[in-house]
Length: 261
Ligand code: FE
Ligand code: FE
Ligand code: ZN
Image 1: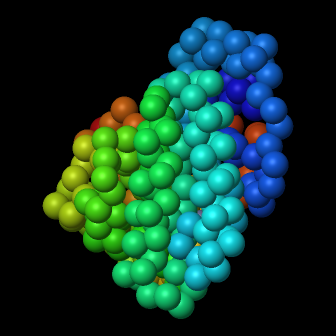
Image 2: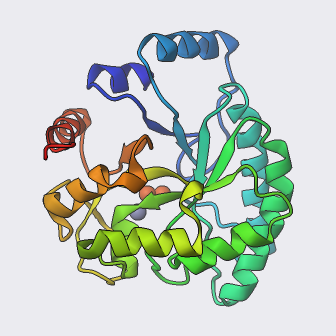
């Protein structure tokens, strides 16, 4: 995975801590870890953004599912500590009919147990598209979670361009979007970007990613995101429907458009 990333010129990458659909993870091999740490320092790999299984639902109305999310995340935190200093991104979850307020409360409860174990890891809340009963499609909801946890020093946000577009944040006025983010959440909390185009129109609440430049956001607006002062020095992760070679081309395309003017 690290070798794939380097072969296509990437300086960061995302990975699932276990099967993205959940379930048990491999035991950590200390030789693998050592090799990985050497490889990353040799190739100037910057911060990595691990992704929790997307099936975890920390604010489900089903207590068993909430407990499962908690256990998986606690185990992931132990794994993350093998490669200190990186990010662990998760979907705040879907309140499944309980309402946003209860959803937020349950996410806070989970984070109050998980965050104290994240000694050398920063946990990131991902901005969501607002599909179904997803929590986190408004900056206010993420801000509320950050405000309420007991210790938020290891808590940040990963902004997904497809998701915020689908949530209704119009990237035509990017200054306004980042202004709003700064007012509500604070730009110092912004730690990573998922750079994706969207198959759907602004505010569609759908969450279907598209290849860069092939969707409703388009190359120009995505170029503005990578060039905006609010995103400089952040890791950018592609989650577009591609194979390795497609990612290579998208990295080249975005690099070509980086600070062009
Ligand atoms: Fe995600
Ligand atoms: Fe994402
Ligand atoms: Zn998505």
